[in-house]
Figure (cartoon, rainbow, N blue to C red):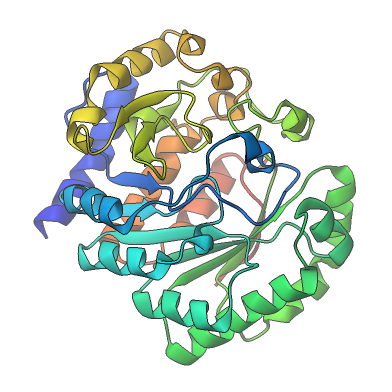
Length: 361
């Protein structure tokens, strides 16, 4: 109960601190992204991982993961187990879920579905995963395999169906979302023409919702995706609020500013050389927050140059980072599905920008 109260207090504290432009924060992050691995089995056209060959690949040791969780359990509400890479490639991924859950930290993951075998699906569900996002990105074989290079449409679809059947059989509480990327107007047309047939694959299965999204520039790293970014992006600069809401740890313990820093271009600290609490308010983090507020962020990270997150319209006065983080924290506190509620509010506040939810429970 005390931990939930702490998480609840963190929500207004993070918003107030962001609004006031504080750089030394009076709270610790309720959200932590942890990268099990930066390895991936696909070469998706909209993802920086497709050009990661020149960077060192690795897998987080279970010992390092345990150390992260051992400290984070005191203040973290949830962890997202992916940054770059395909998390299911980690041979001990289900153990990571168990460790986090044993320490009362909710677990979230996004997967490309290609490795979601019946055996692994059972391990994940029985470990107690709270939320899974199926990054599917196409309602037809042509579109899907054009985006998800090296993936097979039929196999990935069957993996999702089998996972949902097992979820139903086990009566698992794991929240399941399927996300489809809309690259351009042609993709939009294809999606609209085929979504009804695609949805029929999940009839009577516990898929909570399907939603669409547009590609990201990944912090400006993939300039080629800029043409796909929605024209509804605002003209008003919003300092990156992830710096006020979360920590992001790469597979080797390096801490970066956000999930767009795939390659550790802006390292703000390294765990366990310093504790998470120390890194959170250490000089590199404070300096970057200050630079972000003053629009001098390029001094620290050139990848911020074309980052679409800095120009997304605020909804209810909040930028996307803190908005999403605090909504998820609230969901973990109350133990109920609040995502649909928050999405409806977002859509009412800004229907042009909110993701298109095409199926809900």
